[in-house]
Structures are given as C-alpha cells and as structure tokens.
Length: 356
Image 1 (cartoon, helix red, strand yellow):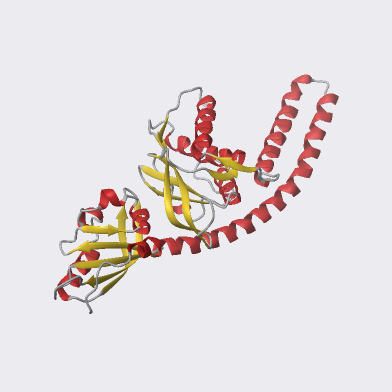
Image 2 (tube, one colour):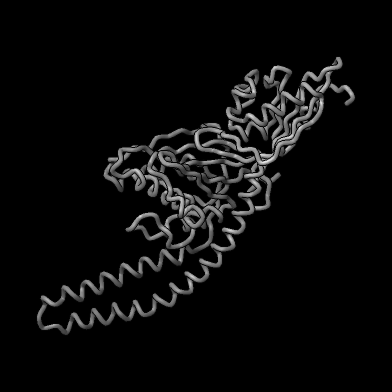
C-alpha cells in the first residue's frame, strides 16, 4: 500500500459510517461524529483511551486491528456484537485498514463500523408499522361496531331502572350502566386520538416537566422521577399535547413496572447525530429515554408489545404503548425499547430541523 498522510477530517465528519482511528498502540487518535454517536461518548473523553477500554469484549475487532498494523493489510469482520453501555448490544460490520504516514510500517489503523443492527431495526420498524396500521384499521372498525349497541344497552338499562318498583334492584341496572360506560371509554381509547396536529416550537424539557407534575399529582406526590437532562438541547417542532400524552403513557408504564418494588424511574435526554427514522437520515435527533429498574419486559411480548390489546399486566388494556407509538410517529419520530431484568429503556427519537 502506498504511504499516506492523515485523511481529510472534514470528510470523516460528513460520513454516516462510524470511523475510529487508532495508533500502533491501539490508542484512539480520531473519532468522527458517527462513531461518537454510536459509542454515546464525546471525542474529548475518548481521545487517548485504548480500543479495549472503549470497546470491552470486542476481542475479534481488537485482534483484527492488531493484525492490520502487524501485517499491513485490511481485515473485515461481520456481525460483531459490541456492548455499548449497560444494556445496549449493537451488531456491526467492521473493516480495519492500515495507514502509513512515514516509514515502512503502518502507524495507524482506520476502523470503519457499519451499524447492522440499526439497518435491521429500520426494516423491523417498517414491518411493525405496516402490521400496526393493519391492526389499527381492524381495531377501529371493530370499535365503531361496538359503540352502537353499547349506546342501546345503556339506554335500555336507564329505562328499565325507571320502571322498577323495587329500587333495590337498581343496583343491577347501575352495574349494566357502569360497565357500558367503561366499555365505551375503552372503545374511545381504541379509536385513538383524533383531531389535527397543532405543531409549534417547543423545548422537550418543558414537556417532560409537565409530565412529571401530572404524574406526581395523580399519585398524591408519592413519586420521585429522576432527571438526567442535557440542558443544551435545541428546540423541536411538534404537537405539545400529543407529546405530553405519549410520554405520560410511557412514564405511567414505567411506574407500574416498579410498583411495590421500591425502584426508580429516570428521564434522560441526549442529542444524537446521523440517525435514520424510516427512510430519512436526520443530521440531529433528540433521544429521550424513560428508564426503570423493574423486572423488565416479558421476552414473549418483545415483538408484539406495540400491538393493540397486548399487555404484560392482567389488568392492562394494552392501549398505552400503541397510542404512544401513534403520537410519536405523528411528530416524525420513532419509539423503541430495550429491556433486561433490572433495566428497561423506552426511547423516543424526535428530529431536529431538516433531514440530512
């Protein structure tokens, strides 16, 4: 391979591919924006750390980097699982290329990482959205069919109550009326939120603080939600009421997950670069996480948790997450989750400004 100098770093910053450059001791000397986003750490904190410190357990990748420097040739490793943070396990394809500055031995190695898991998630999200749209249409049709006879049942029960001579029997008509009202409320929730979006410029932290206040009032102040906010986040354009409802559903679910266990719920916000939502690559997105340390999501529900009427609780309606998903999608965003016992994260990604 012909000798070369450092590549154009501005070009590296423009790449959607995560790129890490290490020296002959495997210490990081350059990390582009996509790699910082993948690792969720700034370049300032990463620089001069060793590759094993940054990517613990990535033995195949580390061995490939050493061989590239030693043998002076490129290596490719596919479907590597990288542990990024506590629960984030990401699958990537990696290519390691040796670089020469001066001399006969390579002094740098360029590591390119393509997030295969992200592409798989995009495809899965597309399939899930299609199935969810079909489910929603069927559910809404069913709900409309249910609403009409419910009105008749309630009206008949009211007429019957007026004709009763023994008012003690009114207890039974009240049960009928109460159950009809309960089912009607459930049907209204099944039909989902209606009305036009009222999008405006807003700060995501204002939305989250309102959600905290509402939940605190609901629970008589006997709840503490931890905050881990990035105060430098830019504003977004979204429907405030719809976002409030979406995050209320997520926070309520998290609180129910830790109920009686003495656990904690945390709201975290971060900026994320070069993130794809649907088929659109966004330069910047805001990632908001609702984190709880409850028992986690039942693995058997992992692929269907956003479907209507699917719930991990016996008393759950299975509508909170589908409604939250629908509301987030209306803002051009994406919602997903990762879970293991003791740590569950529901993430909402919302775009900032124009797509890339």
